[in-house]
Length: 466
Image 1 (cartoon, rainbow, N blue to C red):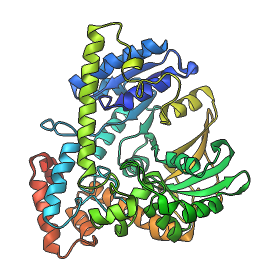
Image 2: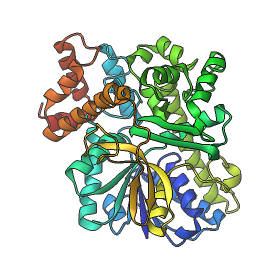
Image 3: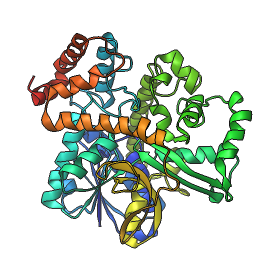
Image 4: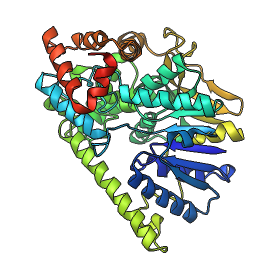
C-alpha cells in the first residue's frame, strides 16, 4: 500500500503522520512517498522521517520526490497538506501578510478574507482560494489518470471549499479532515469529566461545528457547563492565543445559538467579536486570540523558526548517527502516543476493518436536516472496511445554528466556488459589496484592482480576465 503526502515539507504535519503509521502494527510494510516543491525542506523531512521510523522500529519504506505526478502514481491514499506559494516567497504565509496589509489601506481590517463566520487567518485566499483549488484539481486530474481508485484526504485549507468543489465537479473520492473537533476534550477537562464517560456528538460544517449531543454519565452535560459558566467563567483567563474553547466569545455564542461552538468555530463568530484588537481581547482573552495583527505574525515567525530548527536537526542527524530524535525533540517525535490527527486512523479503519469513530467532512445526503444533500458537512462517523457510516445527528442542531450560522456560511462557500468556476470578477465584487466594512462600490473595485496587480497575483488576474 502506498500513502503519499503532498506538501510534506511542512513544520510538523508529515512527521506526525509518519509517527502514527509507525505506531499501528497493522500498517507494517506500508510505502510512504513524501512530496514537496521545496527541495531543502523535503530533504530535511525525509532524513528525519527515516530516522524516526528507525527509532520506532517500524517497517515502513519511504521515498521522496519533487514530482506531484510521481507522488500520485500508484497511490492508494494521497494526503494533501500543501499550502501553495510563489517561488519568490519564503512560504505560503507571506502572500497572506502582504494582501492583508494592502486590504487594510482600504478599510478591510485583517484583510478581505476575514469574513463573518470565516475569521480564521489563512483559511481562504482572495475569497476564491484560486491557488489552493488549482492544486487540488491538479491532484484530482492526476488521480483520475494514474490512481482512479485512490482516496484524497484533504487536510490543507480551505477544507470546506476544496472538498465541496471536488465532490461536486470531479469523480475523486475525497474526504476532508480537520482536528478542530478536539476542542471537546478541553471542555471535558475543564468541567472535570472523565472523557470515557461522555456521550458526545458534533456536527455542522468545517470550522463551524457544534456540540449537539453532550451527556455525562447519562445526564445532561450542558447543566454542568451552565454551572461552570456561573462559577468559573468570571475567573477564566486565556493561557495562550489558541486557548479559546471556553472564552467569553464561546459562551456568548452558546447562549445565542443554543449549543456550544467547538474548536475553530469559536474563532469564526460574527463581527461582534472581531471589530478590532480591543474587541478581540474582550471576547477572546488577553491575547485577542490568534487571528489578529499581533499574534498571527508572531505565529508565522514561530513556524519559520521551527522549520529552520528541523533543517538544522536533519543536518545533525546526518552528521551523527547516534543523534536521537526522541531525545532531541520529544514533543514532536513521540513514542507512546498518537498525534491526534485522524488521517492514518481512517486509512487503518478502511484497510484493516478497524471500526473507528471519526469526525469527517462528507456530502450531507440527509445527515443534517434542512441542509442541501450535496453540501459537504462535518459530522461524526463510524468507519470500517465497508466504508463511511455517518451517525444520525441526534439531537438535531438548533434552528438558529442552521438558519443564522450554517446557511450564511454555506452561501459564502457557494459564492467562492462560483467565482472560481465561472471566472467572473463580479462574483468577487458582490462578495465584498455585502461586507459590512464596505462603504462604496469604488472601494470594492479599488481594493481588488490593487490586490490583483500584485506580482504574485497576476495569474489570478489573468484567470479572471481583468
